[in-house]
Amino acid sequence: MTRLRGRAVVRTGLLGAGVGLTVALLLRAVIRQSTVELSGASQFWLLVLLVGGCATAGLALEAVHQLQEGNPDQAYRHPRGRGPRQP
Image (cartoon, rainbow, N blue to C red):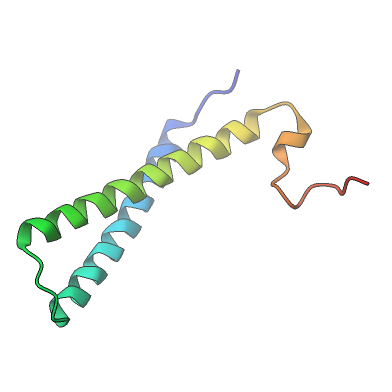
């Protein structure tokens, strides 16, 4: 049975949240410089959705990565497209 390393999963989730925050702030700056009218509440929810989505993606990616490492089947450990060629 595979045990997940929780700290690594949380660390990757936080990294994903940081990326989401960076993208959200970049989009906020672009919106402010454009002619688009967007309310403060809409900007806030855009920020929340981007940060939350990227954090969730980071958590999921690390959890799947750890599950792949812990699987005893060698065929499952190879990333797609990089395994040995099948005739």
